[in-house]
Structures are given as C-alpha cells and as structure tokens.
Length: 335
Image 1 (tube, rainbow, N blue to C red):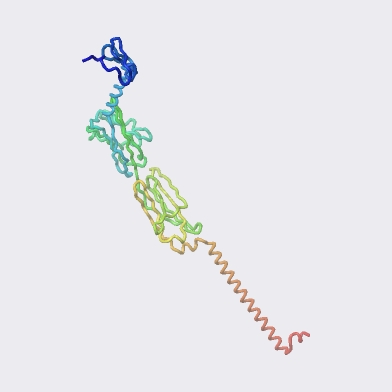
Image 2 (cartoon, rainbow, N blue to C red):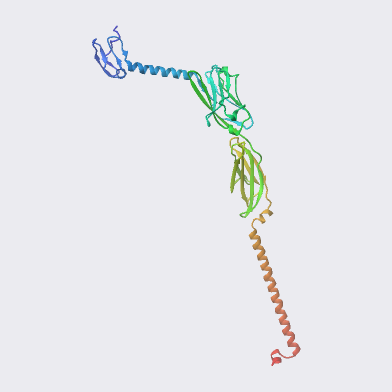
C-alpha cells in the first residue's frame, strides 16, 4: 500500500499537482486555504492554522464547562398573595453539590442583590434594605443542586422579575423567575352623590387592591353601563383604591351593581343599590317648575274668565232693573 502522500489526482474538486517528491497535491480547496502544507511526509499545519485550531478547542472547552453549570428556573410565572410567604424555585441541571458555589439572587428591575450566598455563608453586605430579614436560601437542597429562595411577608413592591445567578471558578449561568403579587380589596361601597344631568349620580369606591383592578357597572340584566368618571390612588403600602361614578336615570331597570375585578386573580367583588322611583321626580327640577307655572297660569285664566262672566251678569241684571222701575225705555227717560 502507498504512504500518506499517495492518493488520487484530485481532492475536494481541486486539481492535484506533483510536489518535489513526485506526488500529486491539491492546489486549491479548503485545506489549501487553511494553510495546510504538504511535503513528502504527512500534511502539517502552519502557524495560522495551529492558532485557529487552538481557538476552536478553547471555545469547545468553555462550552463544555458552561454546560456543566446550567441553571434552570420554573419556566412559568409564580402568583402569590400579599402577606404570605413564597419560594422562588431554581436548581442546577444536572444535579450537583452547590455548597461551594456562589449563588446570588438579584432584582432584575433594580439590578440589586436580594440574597447572596458564597462558600457556605449568607452575605448581607450588599442586600437590598427592603429584603433585610425576609430572605432565606434553602440549605437542605444545596447538596442536590437546589437554589430555592424563600421570601416572607410578601409586599406589593416584591412584584416583578428575579434572576438566580450561579458562579464558580470557571463558569457562570443564570435563570429568570417571574413573581406576581396580588391582593384582594374590600367590598365596593355605594353612595348617592346628588342630582345631575337629569339623573342621580351614584359613586362606587373600593380599597386594598393590587395590582390596579377594574371597576364595572351593571344593570339588572347584567349589561354593562358606561362610567362618567373613574379615578385611583395608591397608599404607602402600594395598595390601590379605585372610585367610579355613573349617572342613573329612570330608564335603568332594577338594582344597579358595582363590580371591582382583579384580572390577575380572576376574582371580583360586587355591591348593589336599588334607587326608588320618587328619587327621579326631583332629578329634573326645571320640569317641576314648568309644571307649577302652567298650573298657576291655568288657575289664573280660569279665575279671570269666572270674574269676567260674573261681572257681565251683574251688569245685565242692573240694566234690566232700571228699565222696569221707570216704566219707559232708558233712552226715552234720558230724553
């Protein structure tokens, strides 16, 4: 059999030329372009090709090292209620002991530390003040690669994204965990605000919600009614208070309902109010005044007609009496 210099007369579609040993060598193609030099022995790499190969090997080793330290989150958002405790899940894949690793939980919005663990110790020097005394890294699961973080006494300000980061001497990886904090407020409070635009103004107010809820009006047939105004405010704890108003006319049948709904929790609270018909009689005072004027005008006209007729009768009676007493026509008597 031939040596390593023996071969076909073409290679990879490139023509072969004879070298000094009389063997056919490629003059083009990828190997020639990479800097492969051919001699009477086996092909060898020049300096440029050796550097490229070294870079590829280094990159491959880094990728392998990174694959050994892979951090995995839950893959979905977590929903928790204000005031409760929550555990943010995070683990290494494949499982490995995490006692010697550096684990840091970070708030993505502020890029600040929520909890820091390194070499078996919890470090609080860089921890956000809002989380002081409220975080704990689960130690029981470290040997199995569990990096779960417990947060106690949830607040509205805890809502948002968290980043679970892991680092060792040669690798780094991270995973994102989405936390949604919710709070259900009080039952809506309904009150009358007075007469306006031919109807009765009704107010609805509810506080203690997070995040900002929806406020809806419904009639007796569960049909939505438009609000004329809607406002909201937020207290020191971050909870929302919402207030809405509607003008109710006599055309609205049955009880009126105010519904406050949390889209995050898929919960709602409802209160109803029934407005009696007599309330609407005073809703249009100009109509009452016009009716009163018309009544007075009718009475005045009737009284005037009555007096006019009575006066006419008295005049007729007086004329008839004067004629009978004289015995002669009035014109003759005057003559």
